[in-house]
Amino acid sequence: MPGHAPGRITIPAWAWERERTAEFLRRRDVQELFQFVQQYAGASQMAISGATGISQGRVSEVLNGRKTITAFEVYERIADGFGMPDTARMLFGLAPKNPDTFTGTTSSASAIPEKRPAPRRNPRPGEGSNVRRREFVGLAGTALVQVSTGSLFDMDEIAAALTRYTGGGQEAVHQVTSLRELARRTHTAKAGYQACQYTTVAKRLPGLLRGLDDAVSSVEGDEVAQVHALRAEAYHVAASLLLKCEERGLSYLAADRSMRAAEASERPAVVGASARAFTRALMRERHYKAATELATSTAERVDSAMDEPTPESLSVYGSLLLSGAVSAAKSEDRGQALSLLDEAGDAGERLGGDFNYQWTAFGPTNVLLHRVSAAVEMGDAGSAIDCARQVRLENIEVMERRVTLFIDAARAYQQWGKTEQAYQALRNVEDIASEELSARPVVHQLINDIRSRASGHLYGNVSELAERVGA
Image (cartoon, rainbow, N blue to C red; front, side):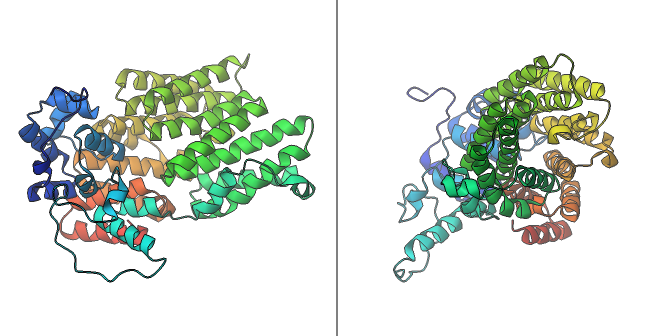
């Protein structure tokens, strides 16, 4: 339409206000949403593809009921591409673009009709912000927004450690923890993260980060590089944990700090390991091209830095290729995703087995796990399940990798319309690492998506799971 940005679809405001519209938005029924857009905007499948960044073939499959959409970031692209108003966004399970709009009264012209609430008393002094927060959460009607306004962990301490740009002064230098102790605590944090012990790791991270930052000014010679390498690892843990909790700004800051510390260590393998965290942070912001370029260029850097690859450098190299493959899959660049997976597969064969050098958990099994992840991102549910069935669980020693496989399988089954199997995959996660469900807003949304499509006894089982994990 003239006067609108390319790719943007315009829908009459009154169409968003229909009760039927509210119903399918609450269900997150993307098939009916696409049909709605065709009806009220006259949009073709190609126009929907251009507005949302979803391939035309995938749009066709959704409209024909052969595929479903479950990825939160795709929901965001759909809402943005269709110019979804904030009231509709919240019914769709997304945060509004302008939350302040909903702290007061909303005009009838812009709101989807709602039952008028009973009059409330005026809040007591100091209570107003809490009241507005409850109103906002109630309007959103989704556990995801509740999590975004308050994490499972106390993020204030982690945020304070991340934004501490100066050391503790001379007094802190005298009280600095020994390098050996800092190395032990960093190792414990990395192992705890991989074991999905997120609450314990979150409690210990602030003190570890402060201790490592203070240690920089108290060491000399070769120990300087060692401290920076430890800082890179600790900030990598922080970034990974924050990404799971959808703390987007803090995770990006932690990933940046990890990269800067890694560069200061002058160790290519450490730089490569930190680049993996930064790649994931870029992906979370949907900067897929930048993420893929960072992963592949850093992989080349790690490879060229060694005359002969070591098990550590080969593991980091392969892991970076896997990160790049997933990022390419998220941008629906199938060719590059499969090419990078094949290159990583070659690296895994050269490594000769599954190991955890530089905390990568890299090897042939991890390559297969990433084939599952990439297939899910590209909407190839059948391929994802086929790859998942080839994985031998006894070869996955890192718990975080094992539960990621089950979550990816749940996403694939949900895409495939196999709700019972999706639920069972998440029950496996609950049995072995319940914090993976309770800590992650994206998994909460997956649980709610499964519940919205369940019925009978399955609906009850999924509802109980949602209650147990706080979804």
